[in-house]
Length: 225
Image (tube, rainbow, N blue to C red; front, side, top):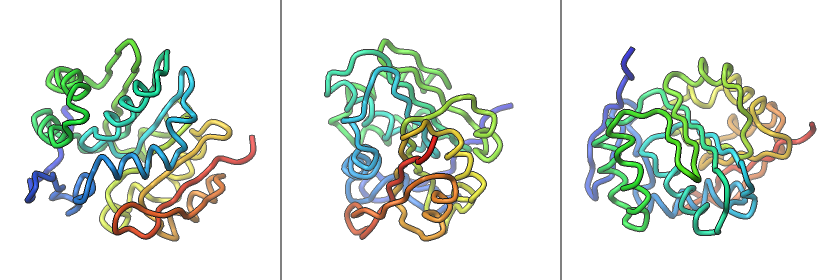
């Protein structure tokens, strides 16, 4: 069965916006800075990186988070393999992903390295320092069957008000069940029901300063064993 592709339009400044969810794929202010603030710093990365570290993500989108994470991995001189698994119901077409990533010249080398993979329709990418898998489909169905455990989660679905399915308590419970002890999660949203869902899933939840015009974001640490 073919992937159900994303529907998007390009707004001023070359920012891709989902027409399905009426929400941009990354910050209109500075997408890379937002990723570094919310998902990297929000998970205490790169300080926590170690051989075999596993990032998992709800919402692959433009692939910006993957590029920024691999860039951070390489910049801090990590050896070994970064594992990265992303769950996405509506993947972008390869040409749209390449166009979106071109907005971040600082990541051009990594984007160019991975572009042939997207063009070939690859869902698995194996490099010397990266093992990436894209799991296509509704995460409410695909995540329960995933055998992995993440050291850090990027919760990057479209806004809860636009795409509530990716923020349901049942899905957040699966995030908790697929998090290693002491693992973390971070998201740009500070919605109360999201924070409560993470707490019910076994996380200690903290509100932190958000990026740009967002006053707050959410950080979470898996507690217990």
